[in-house]
Image (cartoon, rainbow, N blue to C red):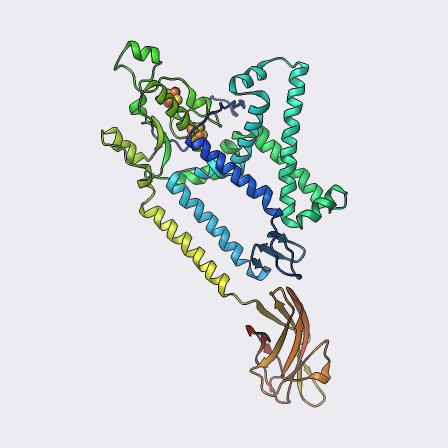
Length: 483
Ligand code: SF4
Ligand code: SF4
């Protein structure tokens, strides 16, 4: 079998390869149907999610998934992430990264072949081509035909559809950042923020350019991911493989029939190349041009069926299995390649992080306090000898209902406090405050300690006065003259 090449295919000696249009042929088969499914699900999720509603009560937005930049919140169904909880987002990103490692080490570039946005949108644009211009041969004919009015009108119509797809893609993106129905209304009335129009324009252009025109060039020449992925694959990874020991020497069906036993199973019909969305010939071996979408497996299996030979001349296989099969052993079921120490280790790390995040999410407090002492001046010496420090308190009520909270002083005996709103007359060791729903209340707090107090540690304890009684402690220092 061909040895794997993880180096980009560089035909010709020129500095740049001239671009060639890929007119991939329509194919049906299990992998194509799976690709349809992934495409429909991912597009439905992308375009439909901003329209899902989620009732969070009267004090929070009812959009199920929302990045609320103005209020610095991220909502995802029943989960609300505040800025100081960004570690949840970081955890999800780490899980996504490890998930990609897991998938790549198990089934090669399955992400590229099925669910990468570049792949999904390229596939969508290729279906538009097929719908407007016909299948491969008709498209090649039209491409080579002179520019007549008919061709101009057909191209204009197709590119208009490209623009509509690009526009919907950009339009869906901005809806993740504002209430979708309100934004649509404001957008069409010209009342949305300029950033919304600029974002839609930029995403329309990039979608049409990358998915409509550049297509496989992005995967082959621009994207860094295939270069990284090759480091994660080994001889135990499942890859789309042409079994050259079975297919070679290749020859047409006619030649093979005339010379029984002289040719392998490949009848050189080029169907595997014709259906490939990147135009790669898998018979040359693995390459960065192959996104492992497996459509060539569908094409070749169909050919093998038509000529009465066993399926699997092109198949998912590991290098180890290929060597085994080549030496005459029976092929191993592909799923067996999935269960091995490396993939299980990735799975263990991935699921541990997921469980840790779920645990942290389930046990996190919805009450939070941060304390910042004033440092200019650090303290004030009063006429009666007592010492006063000032602090800025941030009280977070992360529940979607207003709550009464208690702020108490700890570790400083004899000290009293009052807030900027309540005044010194209310000075006491604890204060009661109303914190609005889903908000951060900023308070100025003044703490006065008796004469003779020296620099010491101080803590504020915030306690929600409700059935849960959650609390949080903000530690700080109390400054005073060194005596
Ligand atoms: S589809 Fe199969 S038989 Fe036809 S050229 Fe490709 S590998 Fe050979
Ligand atoms: S060579 Fe086969 S698996 Fe690779 S991109 Fe082309 S059709 Fe997909």
